[in-house]
Structure formats: C-alpha cells, structure tokens
Length: 302
Ligand code: NAD
Image (cartoon, rainbow, N blue to C red; front, side, top):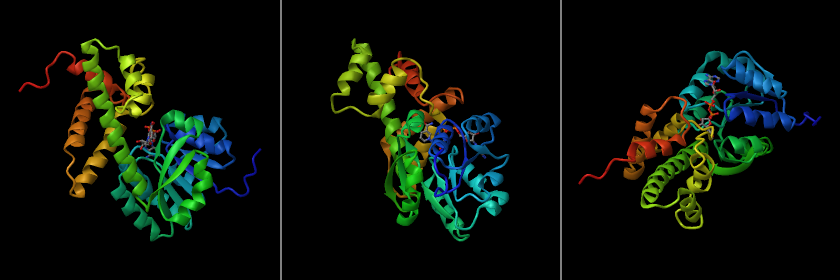
C-alpha cells in the first residue's frame, strides 16, 4: 500500500468520462480521494476502485487540501463553487484545481472571489481524451502562480504531463483555442476526405499519406484512423462539449477585438450539427454528419 502521509487529501467533483479514470489514477497513486458526482452510478464506479464517495459536493470538499473539478462547463463550475454549502465547506488554505475545459474569463473572476477567502484557484484543463486519462498520459495546461503550480505538480503528474501556460486563466484560454483548432481540422479533414473519395481515392490511403505530409493533424493522426474510418464514432468526448469549447474560444477572440472569420464559420457549422444530432453524439460524428449532409449537394452555387 503506498504511503499516504505526505500527500494532500483530494476531493474530486465530476466523475464522468474523464473524471472517473483521472480519480482512479489518483487512488492508484496512494491519494485519499473523496469523489462526488450527481450520478449514483459514477460514484459507485470510483468507490469500486477504492475512493471514498460523498452524497453532496459540500461533504466531498469539507476538509480537503485539494479540490479537483472535472465538470462540463463554467456554468456548472460556477454553480458548484457558488453553492453556499460548498463555499462554507472549502477550507481556508485549500486549493481548487479546475481541470474542466472552462471559460477563462469566468476562471479569472472565480479566482479573485476565492482568493479573497484564502482559497487558491488553479486552472489545469487537459488534452489526450479518455485513453490519455486512463493511461495517465494527459497533457495538463496549467494556469496559476508558480509556487501554487509547483505545490501541485506531483499530484498532477499522476494524471499526465504538466505544462505551464501562464497565470490563472491561461490554461483555460489555451485549451479552448486548442479545441477550436482541433475541431476546425476535423471538419476540414471530413470535407477533404469526402472530396477525395468522390475522386476515387481510398480514404484510408488518403489519411495515411496525409500523415506523412504537411496536412497532418490530430484528426488525421488519431481521430480518423481510430474513430471515423472504422465507423465507431466513440472517442468518449461529446459533440456538445466540443462546441462549448469552440464557442469559448471564438467569443474570447471577439471580446478581445480579434476577428475569426474562418473559425467563426466552423463553429456555426458544428452548431448546426449539434442541433440535428442526438444530445449524446460523440464529437467525431461531425465527420459522419458531413459525409451524409454534403454527399450529394453542391455547396458552392455561385
Ligand atoms: P461528462 O459529461 O462525461 O462528465 C461530466 C460529469 O459531471 C458527469 O458525470 C455529470 O454527472 C457531472 N456533473 C454535472 N453537473 C454536476 C454537478 N453540479 N455536481 C457534480 N457533478 C456534476 O464529461 P467529460 O467528457 O468527463 O468532460 C469533463 C470536462 O473535461 C469537460 O469540461 C470537457 O470539455 C473536458 N474534456 C473532456 C475530454 C474527453 O475526451 N471526454 C477531453 C478533454 C477535456
């Protein structure tokens, strides 16, 4: 049994596709983890891996040195941290680590509010998907003061590689921009593969050769070979969550006075797909939707 004496106690709120494997890795590394999720099934899954579980978010965070959040959005993060029972239970001197893909402007506001009560906020969103979470191979983009990040580094390294992005909010800004690029690549790849197939190219050959050329991306390297070409569309990252991230990035650019005509068009197309597909659609379904929706239509009509 690993020695727990020198490790901070951890509350983990949000035990979904990502939060479950991430919290399970912490348990495996010897951290005392108390998990909370609205879903009873999610709580049962982490309890089976050796975590304690709580019936409310306030009970989970009470007395914890570090509170990790892995929630869908800033709206939910704000609701959890704004709940007066949670606010009362957060110990002075504790650190909240928001690993969700949140809105950086909301994160800055929350950091200021928590700071006035002696609670530190660090943002540490991740890239690498469910597989990366299971293997402890996430890229963790951390925003926060250097000594706060340093204090958390051993704990975070249980889940992946720590990369400092800058001050608080920087991780969330970087993550949203990363996902805007990733989603735009995925859509462009679907359009390109569809046109190539119409020309008579084999999609698998296209992806293989693009991966040896300058058009390669996470979409050609990972998403097409693993989820699109086999037709499984099951990466474990929901389409609605991807569109939320794209919106954060495009809105942030607008707020900062930066025009984003290309990515602005991409997010509008993704938003149409969200409207037409079931709530549970995986984000890789954007490729199937593109194939089906555009297959027999001339989009450029002049
Ligand atoms: P998910 O929908 O699978 O999990 C979210 C969990 O939060 C659910 O179990 C839900 O019950 C829980 N929840 C919602 N409201 C709650 C509340 N008020 N209190 C407690 N629990 C609550 O989502 P996910 O895929 O695990 O993603 C979580 C975050 O990580 C999102 O911000 C997402 O954008 C980001 N992310 C996801 C991936 C991925 O591949 N899935 C990769 C990188 C980042």
